Amino acid sequence: MQLVGTVVMARLLTPAEVGTFAVAAVFAAMAGAMRNFGTSEFLIQEAKLDDSVVRAANGVVLVVSWSLGLLLNLLAQPIGAFYGASDVATLIRVLSISFFLTPFAAVTLATFRRELQMRPAFITNFTSNLLGLATGIGLALQGFGAASLAWSTVAGAVTAVLLALLFKPRSLPLAPSLVGARRIFAFGKHVTGVYAFGQVGAGAPDAIIGKAAGVTAVAYFSRANGLIELFNRLVLYAIWPVVMPVFARSAREPGGVQATYLAGTGYLTAIAWPILFLMGLLAFPAIRVFYGDQWVASVPPAQILCIAAALGVSYHLTKDTLLAIGQARQCNLLQFKVHALRICGIALVVPFGMNGASWGIVAGTAVGLVLTHRSLHAATGLVLADVLAALLPSLRIAVLSVLPAWALAAAFPPDAGNYLAVGLGGSALTVAAWCWLLRREKHPLWAEVTAIARRLAPATRSER
Image 1 (cartoon, rainbow, N blue to C red):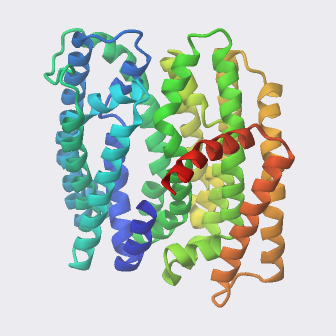
Image 2: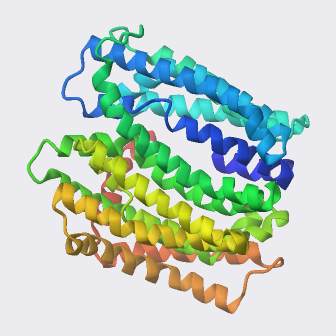
Image 3: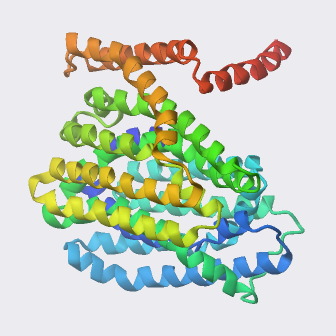
């Protein structure tokens, strides 16, 4: 649905409208990274939950989220004046509405994650995204411009709250309290820093480029980054709800965290790297298909950002590993360093335009990997040789699986006349080569693929 929404909205809105929303969304997302104040992570890693802990979590989320909603409203006008766009202030005020709603769903959804009960979360996310998408497209067709994206977010938040209340077990208290909240605040301040620094790092390019080059340049960069966001939603967001609960369980077994980290990293990179390599190779067809010909200026930065994403995914599980074993303070410090490097890299090269900012992200990500490995080693004892042993099979599979698509693109360089054929052909060749290589290389992921196929086969036969 996010893919459909991106494709449709890219054709209904102008680059200036998309850029205006992107600037407003940066500030809302920064505040959004702090509104749960680490309560979800606290509840997941807590050894035993009782009603007093749940009520305290409700109280913390309510106080923090409402305070941030009020703060956004107070800062909306100065932010709009800073960018010379009054529409930015209006959009921030609209986006702030969700801050007054989500506290009523946060704790309920966190307890489902803790127990790895994904059905309620799936139904909630599916329905809220569907109604948000319908709202956004409907308003865009009515000429609401950038505001259609903001109201789409609010519609999704309203739906999520209503469904979370519907699914909430009767035994789970909803009334807030601040009794016992000190423990949550002590843990949550570090977790909040982790996500706040992450959001600042993610939003820094839009904020910096918006000031240096204007909202239209932000729109093109945002569409380039949109390819990475498609990958995030396809892969990283899919595993996000279960990663920390699984690591928290592994932490209770000797050597469990190390084994789980290495296996998870091997699985993740075996999926992520072929996708990112292919996206970088076929960025022109991807941009044309998803966004249309008015966005082809986004192709060069998109290719560079694929490099940064491929580097970052190699240590993607480190944050959740540190949080799962109670190393919130260390994780917070790591995120500060990593994203400070990212922002510095962008700021130093942003005078060279979108491509310069993109290469700055690559440089910051590469240096950040060194710091990330040091933190991982200090917390878990994993050495570089262990991590490389998990990564190298995935790298070999990724490179070899993309080679047929590279040969096709070299023989028929993508252009306005053949981009669809080259894009579809290259994708099909990569998928076929990937499956063959997984089996030939006896990658552990192949066993997971065949196990899923065996489980699905009886269901298919019974339906017939």
